Length: 555
Ligand SMILES: Cc1ncc(COP(=O)(O)O)c(C=O)c1O
Image (cartoon, rainbow, N blue to C red; front, side, top):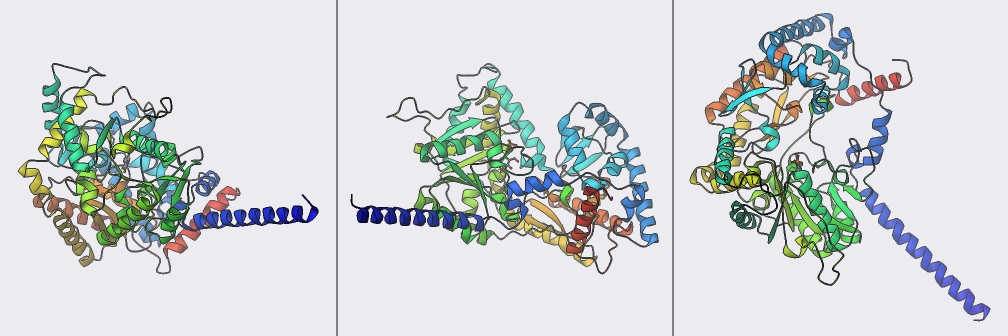
């Protein structure tokens, strides 16, 4: 090769390298732009920042005065807190005593107990407002604690309780009866599975089913299969969405290692569609349709309620349109579209979120309620995606097993569940479901508005998020006033209230009365006093200063 040809070849190579770098850079830039602006969209950064935040908490004086209220307001708060604390002690004494006995031995309980309210307030609350974590029975829409107090249950048992506890007791009892002769034999199946597979295929509109022990496992299997069949590495999850606690779907705070093959992209965003349309390393997109209530935000919990910025609003048409567009780009690019219906599944429609939003996925995960009250995770998918081996590469398999998968008792309770949701009574429950819950929610919002209470409810069918309309540092206190009024909330407090569909209008009216009474009492006790100049931003700025001072040792 003469020197001229060499020069030309080198120039061409150089130009090629520059072009490749530019293309790569553009693709990176597109990816960065598709991340949500918030910290929820930046998992690595959020983990680094979390590691920098020092612990500190408020002493008794500061606990009531962190927003510098006038002296009479602080006194009102102190008196209110004292009353509430005395009432908790009297009413929930035995339940709290028994809970204290087990607390040191149950790490989960220690965690949930510590994270009910923003950490600065947590110690005082734990010392003075112990309601306990034990219940002895359930009936209708209520649960009863160890002191005999009956509460309206709005925990929804993490979403499992769609049809009322009696429904599940029945599914379990009949299920146990059905498999009594077989007992806990694993490996071979009880014939109850035959009906389950048929019904799940009908409901999902998909070809095959696999059974797992939890929603987390069903999601793991969906992602693993998507990676296996597409031979691509990355999963896309949408900002804020929960898909269980497996590391790859839970990057950021809460996961000690980086999820290197996960992209967390903005929900309902053109930029996300552009990334999906151009990248070649994306195996699947995971969608948790519950995010329609609060796109791009994590599951709302009162421990993060440091101000009143929490927002939620459900727009069914807009979310359905977004899902259609996601569907189109995934089909075009051979990306596996996975609907994670573990939570929302059977709550919004008999055919789940696919039917509710009118969009079909390639794979769907179910869980929670589907077990008829017992633990379960299910994956349904298209035949070619569910296959765990390749005909032409006998050793290249996609492994997934699990000792308790398809446990006869779970299969039998699921059989009851699937059978019963076909009955006219349950079909009738689904008819006009959204209208019922929208009307109920609006009625309560009307009352709150009329009384000038700074609280509003946003709902997606029977799922609620409580929002606050004026800046305050104390909104998390509402969960304790609600408890005192006889409403049982889960550990995330007012972030998520879940109603079972057997709530009658009379049950609902009782809850609404108690809700209003709790909000009134909270206002009466001065917690919602607010400095007219305060904004959510000024509250956050002040908190940042406080945190920095503690970090630097001046606090
Ligand atoms: C959408 C979604 N996916 C997965 C899971 C994980 O299910 P499990 O808790 O059964 O592992 C949950 C649990 O809340 C969920 O809401």
